[in-house]
Image (tube, rainbow, N blue to C red; front, side, top):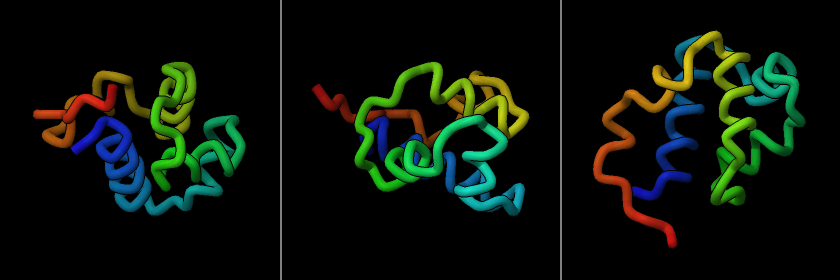
Length: 79
């Protein structure tokens, strides 16, 4: 799994747990809906760290909580 696939799955997983839509996540993260949708759809292969931090802030989690998941083990390099 690539890092972008893992981030997409993690975002969708947390949104499902918190029962929020991508649109709501964008609003509470102070990001555009298209920015989040591009990450989730895999169109954004390398989102900025600040973008992930804003998503975490919107979700009420830390960056550590976001990345502390089995999804991020054994990541395929995308370079």
